[in-house]
Amino acid sequence: MKRLIPLLALSAALLAPAGALASGVVVKVQPSSHLVAVTRSATSVALVHTSAAARLHVGERVALTARTLRNGTLSAARVRVVGRAHSVRFRGLLLAKSRTRLVVSAGGAVISIHRGSRSTAGAREGGPQPGSQVSVQATVGADDELEADDVTVVTPIAPGGSIEGRLTIGTGTVTVNAEQMTLVLKVPRGFDLTTFENGDEVLATFSQQDDGSLVLTDLSGDENAQQADDKDGNGNGDDAGGNGGGDGNGGGDSGGDGD
Image (cartoon, rainbow, N blue to C red):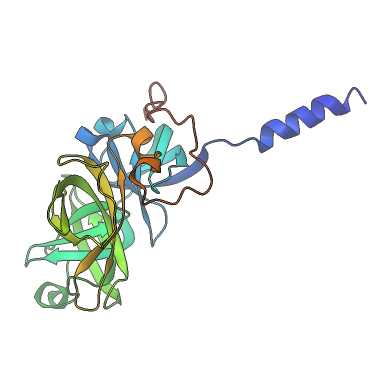
């Protein structure tokens, strides 16, 4: 019986909640907001709060010890560079395009992709239209820029997406200004914006209507990991599952974030 107690204690420790291990490739770095966008699979990208952002580069393959916050972003307790990728693949909503550049929203990150010599001629001249969900395959350039190899349509009209950036509140609309893109989102009747102010860093989730217009469906603070994990104040988030409590500000990256 005495031997059973330590074994039970060990089992409880192994089953205790802890930061999940994950890995992926960095596709965007926002040092000023301590955010990086990391591929989670060939179809998804996650925004990660980490104080290691200033030391990371596009194309680096990283291993994360992180947990999911209430607004869907991650808070990393540890980030470790484990290699470098020469190409990446992910899906997102095509927001805008020109002859030289594509702008895609993936996991809340607005990612700029250069359309250079590696792009097919058809993709440069026509190809996917803004508002479609696309699958992107890109090469990581030496200057940390992504260059499109292949961009194909997954669905002609994406159901929606999300964008992280600075908020401006209008009349019946909100504007979210990201580094590469500004989106105007319609605000549905009854949506509570009283806890937000102009200039707030937010993560806005939206749906796309049949006419191509975008309607705000959720809004949460995203200034830091603590704010991203606290959605009680805006009255629009789902409170199920509790607050997650002791997240802190996600700044637990100190010490273990090096290569």
